[in-house]
Image (cartoon, rainbow, N blue to C red; front, side, top):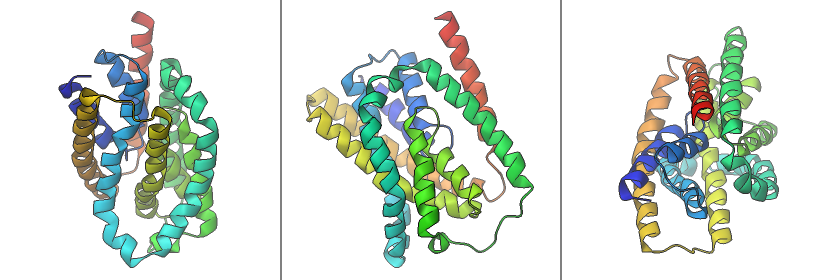
Length: 259
């Protein structure tokens, strides 16, 4: 992997990680289109650079976590179902799901259609006012964690699963978006740690340099993406992301048919 490829992938990771469009799908597709050889390192790279995105969220929400420590307990409760399912499904996901572009195209397209349908349904409901992170119950946190576990399948999107789950539970849009950001902390940290343990850090100097470039780039773009999304949801719903997912799915299918 060249340095500029690591830079591009890091930027895509940061931009897409917290948007409901699946960062995993984007990284796998972009790696294919950039001609990056599919290897154990490339798969580990996609997971490792999430540390940059994690750090961006930590920088943005460190004060909130310090002032409201109960949120940390709710994040732990939400992470438990995701962690259990992720640990059990890890071998299958890395060996089979990550390489299936037909699966990615399907989950992107169906996820986009579902997101557009859900926004139409949710629009008819009156959104609750004044509910913050501290109002999320432990039961709601656990259910959101179960929703997040669906995102172990590439293309579904961790953000989309948690946000839709939270909205379905009656949470305010800004509240579930912020909770989704924070839930990425234990989830992505655990995924990265597990992958590093499995790979035994069998990387040389060029690979370590690529990891560094990708992680730093992911941090910068994730910080910008988080700030942008918080502003975006003040005036918009997630239907545009549904259309984007559907359009990308069509592009992927067309690519698969002609390659």
